[in-house]
Length: 271
Image 1: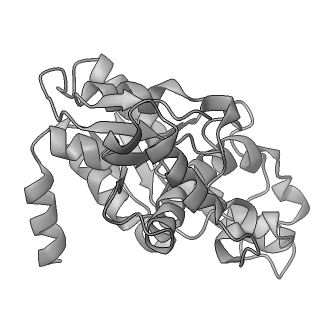
Image 2: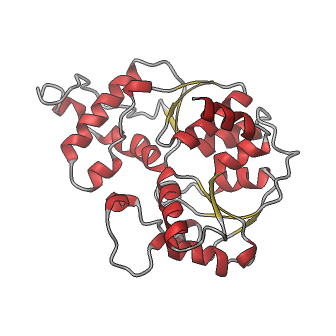
């Protein structure tokens, strides 16, 4: 299976690479051809910059040979899966300002399978290509549904299945799945200052430690989105939760479960 990985977070991307290597999956990344997907740029009104980025990426995709496009970021997943196919690139291909010549509808028939990485890895586990059934991390954790994976694309189970497969005891947040609470970073919120006395990320971490059935016994707050990771790491510090809970990505749990954590950390240090 050929998979190009579109990464937005180095730690998660390295974790995913470690997982794919363990499952003997052939994959590649775009290197210098990878730019920002344009999701938040579009949300804050820069439509033409979004078109420019989309055109660049679809031309890059066309030059690659692959079966599936796998994203580490739910925002990229939603953008590539649902929004790039809507762009009329022909309208802009002859514009001298636009640095691309692509003039077709990209992936209009869904010939390219666009996946969030948890969906791809769940299939690897189910197909027996990644062994997790014997692992027992034994952490008590809770999971936060990213908006663009959950409410936007109705994917709730793949991350949960992977968390459970590592042996963790998964306790649900009171607000979960379609009723999940945004981290506050979407739609350009990552760069905004909030007037609220309590940040959305701080409120969500408080909820994890006080309103889940496990309460203060929750050890790890698990995310599946680099933007969520950024927001909750910030909330962990500003809300004074650093001694109470750790924020981790699903991919980090899997790397630990397959016994590759020390190896990956050594490679990161060496690089």
